[in-house]
Amino acid sequence: MENKNDFFVPINEVAKELGLPAHTLRYWEKQFAGAIRPVTGAGNRRYYRRETIEKLRSIKSLLYDKGMTIAGVKKVLHNGTFDTEANVTKTPVNAGKKETNITPQNNDDIDIAINLLKQAKMLLE
Image (cartoon, rainbow, N blue to C red; front, side, top):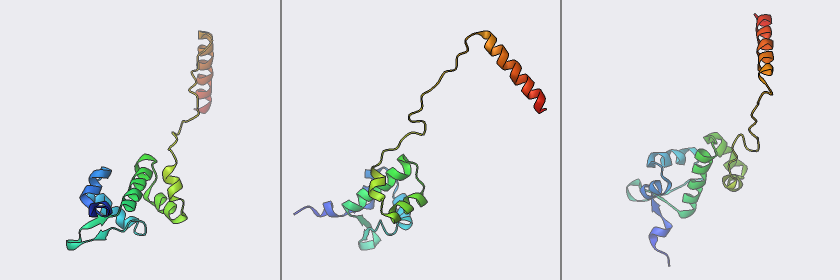
């Protein structure tokens, strides 16, 4: 049989494991009440099951790594797509876009562009 500590982990150890302050975990309990339910022991100490810790890890990833809001994570939890959303890798905003460098053929092109911009500015004023 497994050790008792494998089943229930105190909030301070979970906080260390996830790199979060304990008050953040308590806040998430309120925000994601249906998903995060720690067991309370003597003196109202919170103990988390391993599956709850994994859920907290996924919530942290969605919030911090993927930039979702709390409302967005609630929506994902409500829709039942939590597991798939938590496992999708974050794609950068500019992914797939090539950086283009505009290089004029000669200085005359720059002069022409500057003159056109000056004329446009005068028309707008």
